[in-house]
Length: 235
DNA sequence: TAGGCCATCTGGTCCT
DNA sequence: AGGACCAGATGGCCTA
Image (tube, rainbow, N blue to C red; front, top):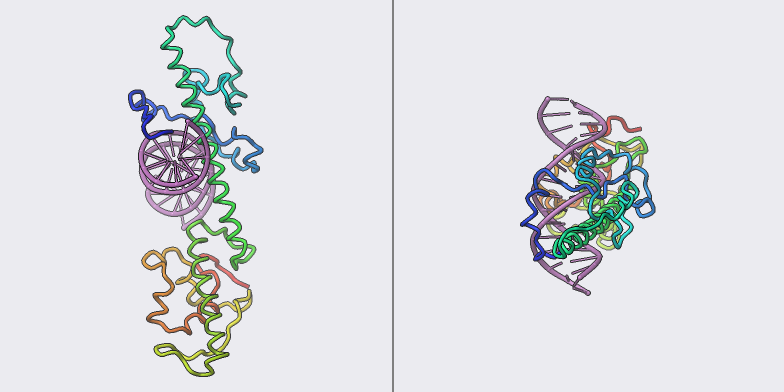
């Protein structure tokens, strides 16, 4: 909607009690959604939508509204309104139609975002029986995981080239550390990598670089395991 | 039951 | 003008 096309004169109703649930999840076009999970989320307020009959956009509008399934086009009653009133109805329908389209796009956009998040989850080292990472956990974990891998590469390069010449201010490279495997876990500093709570204050792994030395990366990789509290048991 | 997480709707803003 | 992006609001579900 254009910022200028403010519907504020009539808006208060919609902004308070009359939220419009014109395109509830379950009614979104299945083809675009691809998942049936959405239909599982009930949206009770939907009933409000029908309070005054079908939404304006559900009629014979330009777009095949999902609501049209619930709301077959009504018979055209003889319009007795003025021409102006008719144009208001048309405008209202157009507005609602645009809103529904925008809702659909927004839904798809969020689905794409979630798909990307799932893809990210799939490449992060977790255990099959792990609880699914939340969005924020996934992002933080990925951030720290990338940092840890980067540090490992850096140290590996350093060990090949520097041969015992630690950078000023850096601890000498100790030993290569394999990416944590399901058996090599120690419940050490995973929290600092993974736990959202522990990340609340500092999201930057480089903080630990500055004051902790590079070998922390090795420990970090060795600790790329879920925290005990989040993942009670590792094998 | 409170709190966390999530999906969705919605209006505003920016961009093409 | 229309689409993308964003943030706020709302309500449902789940768990401690």
